[in-house]
Image 1 (cartoon, rainbow, N blue to C red):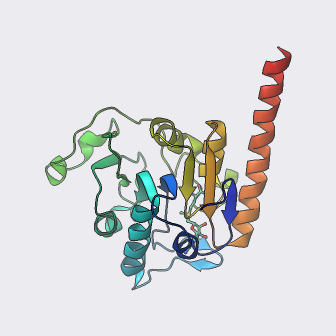
Image 2: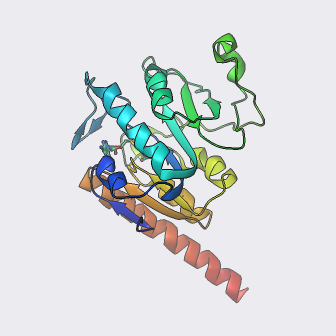
Length: 231
Ligand SMILES: C[S@@+](CC[C@H](N)C(=O)[O-])C[C@H]1O[C@@H](n2cnc3c(N)ncnc32)[C@H](O)[C@@H]1O
C-alpha cells in the first residue's frame, strides 16, 4: 500500500506498479504536455511515442484511484486521456484567460461519481463539441499557469495551490496522489486541507524543492494549531 506523506523519487509507472487497485482515494495531476518544458531529468520535447506513454499512465491512474482522477491536460492530448480513463464520468473545463498558442484550454478530466464544474468563461468554448457536459457549479478565477509571475516560480510548470484546492476540497477521500508531483503543489493543498498526500517525481531536484515547500507548509499549519490551542 502507498506510504503516505512521501514523494517517491522515481518514474510514476514504477510507483503505481507496486500498488493494488484503489490504493489511493484521488489523483490530481498535471502530466508533462510534450511541449518542450525543461524538466531537467525528463525531456518534454515533442516525443513521437508520447500518446502511447500517456495512455499507459492513464490506465494505471484509473486502476489505482478509488474515487476520482483529475488531469490537467492540454487540448492536443485530451483524447489520449479519454482512452486511458475509460470510466470517466464527467468533463471539467477550466478556461485559461491568457491562452498560450501551444496550450489552448486546460481541461480537468474527472472520473468522479459527482459531476463537477466548468469555468465561468466556458461560453467561449465551442460547446457543440462537448454535448455531454452538464455544469453543476463553477471553479473560477485561478489560471493554473499564468497566475504565477515567472520569477516567483520554483518549478517551470508550477501550478497554484488555489487551482487544486476546489478539487481536493470537494472530493471524498483522505489519500491524494500526484504521479507528477513537480514542486509539490498537491502536497501543499492536501496539508492545507488536513489530508494526506503521496507523490512520484522523477527529478531529484524537484523532489528537494517539493520537500522544502512541504516543510514550510507544515510549520505554518503547526503555528496555526499552536495559536488556536493557546487562544
Ligand atoms: C507539469 S509538471 C508538474 C508540476 C506540478 N503540478 C507543480 O505544481 O509543480 C510535470 C512533472 O512531471 C515530472 N515527470 C516527468 N515524467 C515523469 C515520470 N515518468 N514519473 C514521475 N515524474 C515525472 C517532471 O519532472 C515534472 O516535474
